Length: 306
Image (cartoon, rainbow, N blue to C red; front, side, top):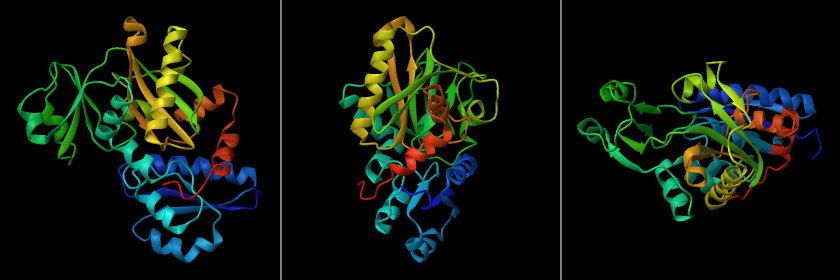
């Protein structure tokens, strides 16, 4: 692709993850300009479709740097399909499936991938009783960046958690004792693996984006056979969701159970792209610079992904 192409970087959006999106977009824009592309900073709001229809003849590729609902759940992808201009990351189907934690878990299970036991319950049901032995996990059905994810421990008051959200339904999951790992993939091929040692009680939004003491490293104490199976699950999860471009699959790994202790938590079809985000960290570890990663994503952009 010629470097004088015009790349419209979509940022902001209508979800609770606008801050993350804006950070990703800022780094992407800087990288694109350094690579010689004509990069446009496009803030996405309710008027985006009108703007896109008026300006689509001037744009060669839409770079989707949105996160959360509307940005990575198939909605913006549907608009970009309608515009018939190449865009980055996964298409409508993969984005919608990946964002729906309940549905993607069922798809993973049917494919033979181990996932934590879980159940979707209403706000009233959550307050009435515990569905799993404490500790257990409570999370929104369709959010990213660990927004709204909480661990319910022995003395946790669930009503205090629910005060902070307008969600009506939640995914309740068993707590998996172990370590956090994540795998990045490029069009279904493994790019690399990181172990995450959170600075807080678990890898929540704060540990991801606000606390600089979280440790990221290649796992030192995981058996090579376990890593091989992690990669197998990551590739299979990517395949059954029909994801394309850059994706990330998150795991909890219980070393004591060896190959039977690998659990897929979720797939992220729109991973963060700041220099401190997980996929760029994995890329750097694998010898791929941030600019080369962004260049690859642009060159991989396609339309008609549905």
